[in-house]
Amino acid sequence: MNNRLEPAEPREWPEPPKIHDQPETPGVHGRPEPPEPHDWPELREIRDGIPPPPGPEIVRAALMRAALDGLEVPAAPEPSPRSLLSWRTSSPHLAAAVRGLHRARALLAMEARLLNPAILLASVLIMVFSVIFILAENNRAGNLAEFMLALAAPLIAMAGVAGSCGPEHDDAFELVAVTPMSPRVIMMARMTLVFGYDLLLALLASAVLAPLNAAPAGLASLIMAWLGPMAVLAGLSLLLSVCWNPAAAMGGGLSVWALYALTATDVPVPDGLRHLWTTSPATITLAIALTLAAVIASGTGEPIRRARATHQS
Amino acid sequence: MRSLDLWSHEIRRAGPAALLAPPVLVLLIVLLVAFGTRLGSREGNTVLFLMTILETGIPLLPGIAAASLIGRDHAVELQLTLPRGYRSTMLRRLAVMVGWTALCALIASALLIVTGWWDLLPAASHGLAGQLAWLSPMLWLTALGLLVAATLRSASAAAAIISFVWLFEQMLAYLFQENQMLRLLHLFATTHGTVPGDWLPNRLTLLATASLLAAAAWPLLGNAERILGGEAA
Image (cartoon, each protein chain N blue to C red):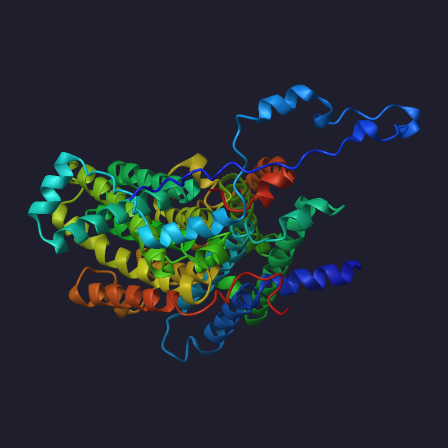
């Protein structure tokens, strides 16, 4: 069916009033009025070949034509030959998984721009200083590398999580809260970036130390010395950040960390704390439980614990 | 707003956790003094615990507080319009924490002097100079916390660095004791011991370097717009 409207029949225009017969009236402040178009006989001749504009009936005609013809759906962009081949030959589940991966990658890339560079810098400084110290003092203490990394890796993970998660670090949290994206997803993305960065740093430090005879028990034993405590302290920091605030997360995490640090001195500490500072099924389970509790708590309601002017107002 | 109201507001702003931590440590000292021997702790161990709390535990609190000063103000535009500079506001907040912690430490050391435990402390001087056992490391960690926080503009990063320095001073005690230069910069020379005659120079060197750290933080704190921008992003 032809979608174009046929031009309407030319209509007769009424003759303009013959103002030449009217008495001339003075203009404003005595100046003459500007000439009207019908004062020019040339314009009348030009008008003869131009059809008149459509009347108000065009609206009804357009609506009727649209209802009868149906809406024209814009054509979808043609997929590239490579994606066409891979998507059509695979299952819809796989296609959905690929789309999910693309979405996760985009989200991680966007969240990476929001990470605080000071926290990343502090993590690098602490880890580099630890490695240098271990290499310098390795001859004096046998398990120095395990002890030092078991303190440094949990510390940077705890500080990184506390410094990156929580409404206090989102100036436009109200905007984020009303977007379709779940705050849990955003929190998990940020946690993945921060924890992944610190995990990579600790792995790099272990890989540097192991070949230099700084880890007598081997690389695996060195990694096991810090992985469990790092996960537990990061989980604790995340839970406290979500349920309370980042300052409380730093305070709580530092208290646990300092208690373990005291084992380097002559001050006696509870044996349970030493058991917590290992990589075992119990510590991994504890870390997962803390993280899950934080994920569940992060989507429940408004950010009621935002920083206030005072603690009593 | 009257000056008294201003200080009252800053005390409330510090929060219960910051205000309760020093008295909790003092309470721990009181419990150790009262019940340490009855619970079977040897005299040497009890002395070590008491000094650890006084010299290492109490100074850490204002250090962390100083590191956490940045990024807690949300009404940035309002702060920038105030006639009083933001540096004085931050220093007033810091003074609340340092003053309150110092008061608690004074009470604890007075208790130790009265009960006679102070005489058993390994390297501490007596009299007024003895108070430098906790005052010097406290001011040093506070100045370092202020400088790191003003530089990095991240409370978490600054607190992590302060904690790491605190830990290293504990762990590296033997290194500090061996080297003559490092011996002057050891924060915990009273607890871990030092060469006889070096204790007072160590305390005075800490005070001098603390003033240098604070002087380095001074111009950074003067840039209110940068500081009030909150956490670096």
